[in-house]
Length: 383
Image 1 (cartoon, rainbow, N blue to C red):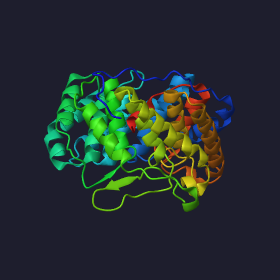
Image 2: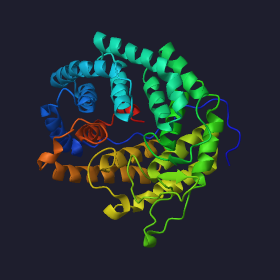
Image 3: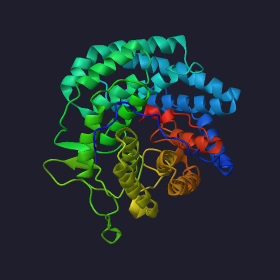
Image 4: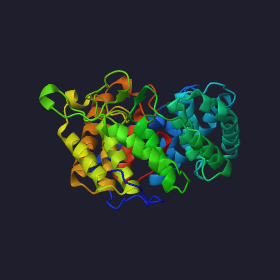
């Protein structure tokens, strides 16, 4: 296993097309209604950004003028918050999430504006100046977040140049303790680098780095035993000094599905059939986990709820063609609807409704993709 790879990464095998599910239309329309009425404060940058992304995708799907108008309005509200971010010396996870959403919008002509283009140029310059500081910090999460932002600024030459500097100076080996999942754990970083390779970005160290990461990942495996409540094959956090940390969670951000996705995509580069077999042993096993104790799913949300699980099953079906993943996709979309019915019955649905990972916007985008059988590629903002 993990033999020498070919020099180039082939195009992703996304032959199976996810089904259009018009039965979900009423659920999406209810989310659309709530999001269209939601008015975040001027300081709620992630809320504003997620809503802008959502309404841009909704307009792309149905060309309703109200969505175009709302997306434009939200973008104008975002620009002052972006100016504050431009002059901030402390960029953490929320700041990078905001910058990535703006970069995604800036890469789409229908969503962009001269003010946004100028703001993003300022982000590019600031990040380029701060790269030595970021690299010196040795924080793997910051590395991945910066790389994600730069990936959304391609094909600009300045973004490609900064990206090459980041890749050339990546800290290795892994720290004493590291996360394995999404968006900024081992799976998140390696999936991002695989996507960059498909986009034509040179990354000579990727095959070796990928082999090393997968070797470390596979060394953390344990046997599944439902009777002992050992639901997960892989831990969510590994450590060189203490026992690995396992969780029954089966979500977008934590659990075996992200590792199955990584192994399937790594198979396309390394051409190792064993990786595809392990990916399906892990991924298809998760289909048995549908209860709250076995998944820890208690909401519809994307980051830690049913919508994110449906999204990952959809990705796995597109990569592998395995019918089981398609069944998982439709099952968890149904679960998403059930949670939505409960959530939208009370006032708790409104705060931070526009956030992609923890609000209704991410749920609405998953439902919109299912209704229209369209990949809006918005998940590149968070993965």
